Length: 261
Image 1 (cartoon, rainbow, N blue to C red):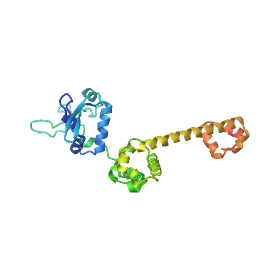
Image 2 (cartoon, one colour; image 1 turned 180 degrees about the horizontal axis):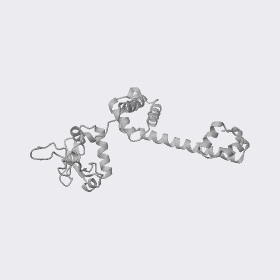
Image 3 (cartoon, one colour; image 1 turned 45 degrees about the horizontal axis):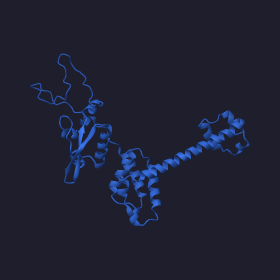
Image 4 (cartoon, rainbow, N blue to C red; image 1 turned 120 degrees about the horizontal axis):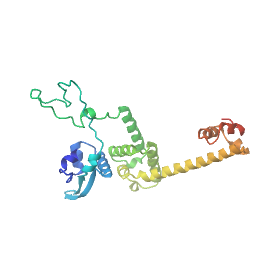
């Protein structure tokens, strides 16, 4: 709505810094940047150029009105209720009752339509996880705790599992353990530049390798059982349970091989 207010009738001519948007909307810096990125990705916003300013330049945007018109409506349809002789006004009815002037229509962002915020219990859990992740960073290079926690929470909201992010920080702490202090990145820069992404990629690759190795091992055990191989004596009860759960073997095959579930 703020960008639309700054735009011309055709949606063009929006040139205001993200800091200006942040001050007027009272949103966080990361929220403003993420929202603009999402608008650009969805095609709602289009970059049309840049204008110089005292801090360098400001990107000029245009709202694609066709994309906006194609969005799903958020305003609920009006429902006609009350007496058919003197129908009740569907609007809020806050105008002058003598002259019969209806009040202004309720906007889509009316306070009653705002979703309930996260519970304090959930917020506390997220903050606790973020604190735990940040605590794993090399302590002599911690800086900007609030900014670090905000970046960690944003990463978790983007779908990064807290345990994976913790492992990434721990891996970096291990890799940089022999470095001099000047060679270790400050924590706010490390999280801001998302340097954990490379570690997350390695963690996921190793996990997939382990899963593939486990699947291959279970397939080999299933072959032993179906062939009633003497090697079945090395199969443990927990392994039998896993094989049954994954439906690689049947209960009849287990019994035929002389094993117990």
